Image (cartoon, rainbow, N blue to C red; front, top):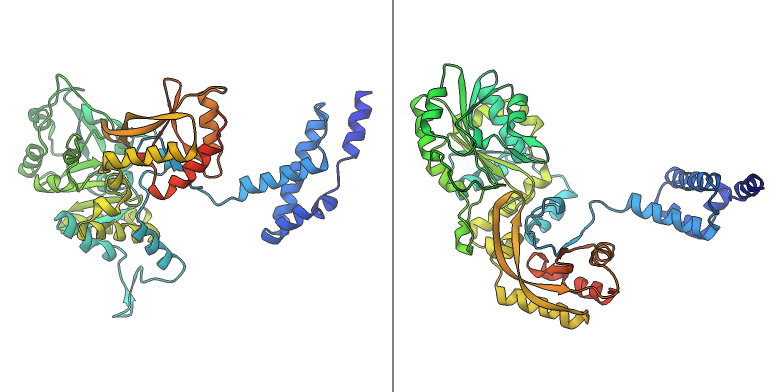
Length: 458
């Protein structure tokens, strides 16, 4: 009997043509190609057919159409989609790290839809170098002799090691032979570059003499890796960057300083530990300094390499430089971001620095506005924000948060509901309370947060 019912249900599945003639599907055909919509309809019909074969009750035509519309929204929605970061993690790696400034957004809009002088000199009518758009700005802001920009800091490290140390040995402290993130490890990077890793010292203590004793005729470079995503405390020792630079110069061996996050601003001004600045690295006279553009710089994904004109020219001419080069849109954003440092307003204009330097009473005021205007059952309380993004590990900033205590549903369901909002809101849970931190929410998003809280069922 069950088989007969199932066969009847299968026969009652509407045809593809009938579904395509439904008003809702006709509307999809106005926006998407006929072939794409047909394939989407077929996929949903096949799913329905398989459910019936497994003994499930068949969906109505209305439900089938709704599923097709939902599938179209999920598959063809513009991606990545905007979210609101109320987690309290400023440089949230999974959420894209640094949001860019309003000026940078305008710069993209002005150049993305038109041809640009990316690699063209209108004055001479000849081909030019895309690096020219940012090199002078980088050199001016940092004090470097020359610079090169690639698509991220891992690419910067790979290019430097491949161009300078392929087939040679690279000396690294055992305590700096680390995993940077996303299973990206320094030993693997050395292997890909064609260089051989020579670890010196121990996990917690490495001395200048350890480097000195490991130098041979085949030493290609000394690599310094700033531990930007974890902290070593207690019985530790490492030679200073300046000491290693002097050692390298004495033996005519290039010293490479991977700063990781890289900052142009002293983080100590905001009650945080002082992260090594780019300027300090250059002052210590290392041969090459490289760091990320989308972390504490506050710009787009990129890797910035600083050093002498001779070494930068060598990197620029290496075949990998083209494979790892920065694209035109990120180049536009980087240029705009650097201008904020030139005009001396990064704390106001660059979102992550506005968050780090945010006035605590203002954060409290915004949080109270959320509570008052949404009517949600909660309270404003003191808490901590973190920097995140592999920067300033363990460092926190005082903040105020909106804390919601669940009554009829769990904290997990509330956070899931916030994530399901039309603009997903990312919160966190502490002691069974849902926490929303205003420090990491852009002020222009406050009204969205308030409306989402109004619609919460707790």
